[in-house]
Length: 116
Image (cartoon, rainbow, N blue to C red):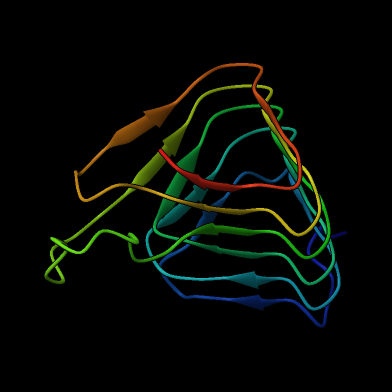
């Protein structure tokens, strides 16, 4: 049995560990790696992000995507998350304009816009 809800949209290049769960209407975009025991909530949007193990993304959050940096000119940007991070609902987290920007381990992000 798949842990990916049938209404979720998953890009062909995404790599999702079999133990990870993806909720209804979630969007998993390109260049995404979701590690073991991760949970992606309903209506969450993830792109250009590599996640470690045990991360929890709550419904409606946005993780990855283009940096909000005026110097950003379209180059590849990647958000790299460690293990056991929690991204609460309606949080917007994007990398700065560097490839491989790391996010801490056991970080809890609540009601914020985070440019790591």
